Length: 379
Image 1 (cartoon, rainbow, N blue to C red):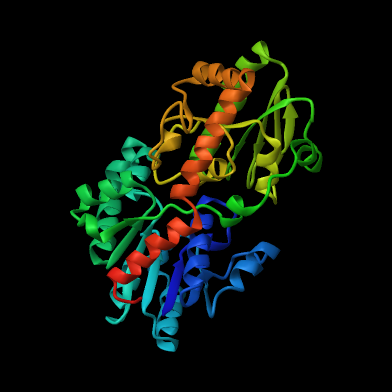
Image 2 (tube, rainbow, N blue to C red):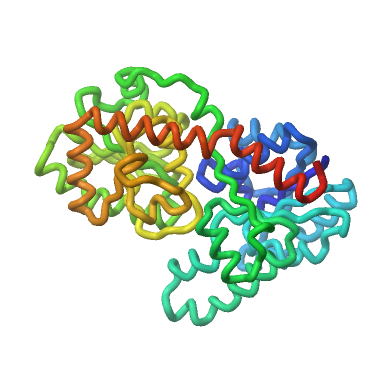
């Protein structure tokens, strides 16, 4: 079986949630056949990206030009045509709809098309846009995503909510939409490091209770969540328990230490950060897709407090797998509850890990992917 992944933004080598989903999908599909990649030339070659790129049979880089829609850039289309001329691909996976439509029309009939829907784009972008701009661009998003969903042989969604929305909004049969929720294999496999050792490695205080949040600062929901921690939640906690400190990390996050908030920027080893923490919070205000960070926390058995938007895509039990907070005061109360009741925190963490093992493990993901490939008659 030969597969071509069109990574529209080069996200497969990026250390964020979207990149994690693509790289884990590649890990599994490489065990079943040969996987090739289309990726922007502008992507920087880090040591981590070299490891990921080394998994592909062939790599087809394409040039990008600012202010021209990706799907209409000449080198993007030329690179795709060269790839399908060089190799006979049984499957072509498209990632995000904004670069896919022209390629779908150029795809050979013998190739099966899989659309990897990281989010339900129409609804997510509606939430992110102003009313004025949405009146202008909303129809474009709707048409583009609907066409991709209708023309694909299979859609891979990351949540039941998105699956339902795609079905209802675009009239796509539920049988054509598979839900794939991917955790990082080594998050399940690697033994935890002792908390004091993990903190020493990251220069974090060993005598504090640490509450963490991580995420790429370029992603608007993460930016809003970080601001909410700094300006709203942390000040409430500072007045009620000065022994609790918040640790923020992520790509493009600025480093600073003010009051009870410590921002440490990008962390190479997220497992070390999680092993150093007492609990995690996800105070995001905009939902959509699946919070990969939530899977990360759950797979390590870390107790989590989140908004309902932060738990979108996960069939959780409030009070069992996670604690849901409605506002800033509620976040503070539940942080204090878990810090003051370690047995409750441990119970929630244990339940979360069991849920993650059942639903997000590589074994569960492989079963889903095998089912998709069998439905497409390529396995």
